[in-house]
Length: 237
Image 1 (cartoon, one colour):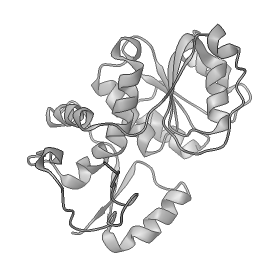
Image 2 (cartoon, rainbow, N blue to C red):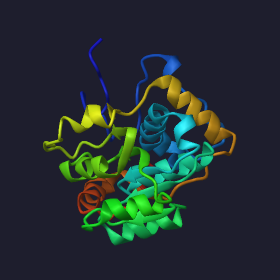
Image 3 (cartoon, rainbow, N blue to C red):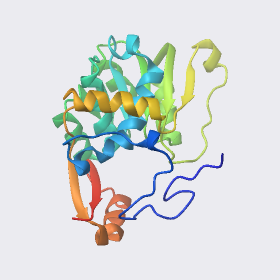
Image 4 (cartoon, one colour):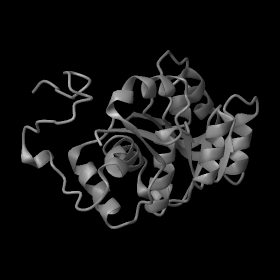
């Protein structure tokens, strides 16, 4: 079946009504606020699926590095806490977003552009090389930095779509037994698992800013300028 995502493969991303092809895609949200929980179907599912690829035995025992402290990064921080994780070290070049990550409970917030960023990350992890990283940026600089701090047998989950090309020392991949895993959103079963956590009150709310539907263009401009902390949600009321 050809993909038919609204706003990607067909028009309708900003529609005020959506026709769902089958009831199996519907999830009962009860009395939860639609605007508050809408991001769980996007950034929530995306980061939840990435954490599942790391595995609970790893994220519950070792700090995870998160590249990017935007909406995805803050959501990932929230989910790690909800899942009983050992915490996360967040890497971002924006001071305001690093501060937001610290306020959201990050173990540390590191400037990825610092010349000693890898050493700072290892120090924040207790002086030990890191077991896993979730790259929500997906840029050459972030993947290269991950190679510097990941331990033998470590996992790099690449989610971000910044683009570009990375030149990795190929021999390091087998020598360090690294796993480089791509992760793109998630599936319906994972979304249902996540919403069970949300309904049970195990996932605290993340910052959500509401805007009227006719403000879509200005909100997109703010996103491009990196001025949105948390998640922006368009509403019809």
